[in-house]
Length: 317
Image 1 (cartoon, rainbow, N blue to C red):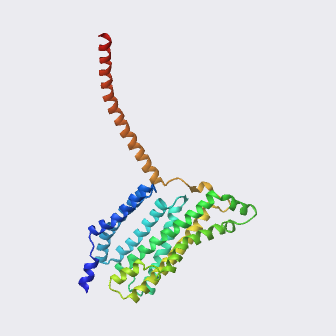
Image 2: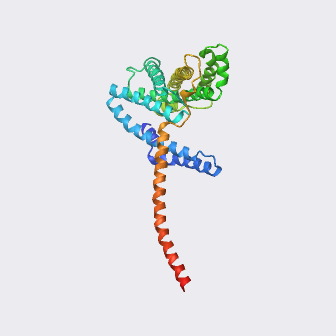
Image 3: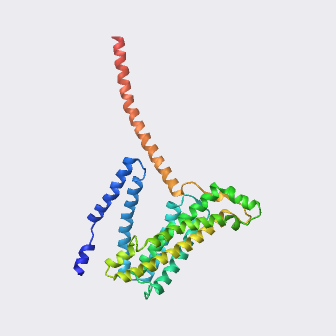
């Protein structure tokens, strides 16, 4: 039986390549229908392959050693990378001090929830067992990113595009928290909706990945189901905590202590990383075009001189 399970779950990069062909097919369909998402699909899938391959190499070493400091370092690295992903790639707009706010929101939600949930809800002793704790932190970070991005994008969009609604409340004497309460409520409702929907269909419509992995790993179906319950409750808790914290931070920064909306604290431009990349690309294009222009000028100059000499000969003749 064990040998059969190992044969079933032994995958190579040929299997990955076959699965990648599904993404290529979707990209081709996008290109034919002019949907404009083909490049994003292929880029995201390529990033997925590279990131998971690197993570597998790192985790293999951590799992073998079981060093608590290494486990803590991986947990911190996951939170840091999640913060960078949120601020640089996911957020359409940013506010001042967003990076430390997002980092604090992630660390303050994922680390306590993962420690308490692993130690008590999952009854793992010690809680820092590498092959148990690190995957949980990774899942919590991923869900936390989604919730925070939805919340902060909604808050900043409302304060930037519909600021007159908040200013009316402020003009009639409302505090900044009273004026911004509807925005905060809607932002948190949107941020938590995916988790609510996901929990409502688990076990009836979908079988989640954690439960599937536990079953493939040899656990009983009952144990896998209970493990998935614990994980989903931890994910929902992290998403709620981080979304509430980042929503309060965004509102507190953009609407200052004097009850004014500070539009200058909202950055609607692409992130500095993408602006720098754009400048580099434009510079490279300008350099290539300059070289091509000079080459064409040299070739065209020689051809022009030959044509002029031929015309003179014809005129003299």
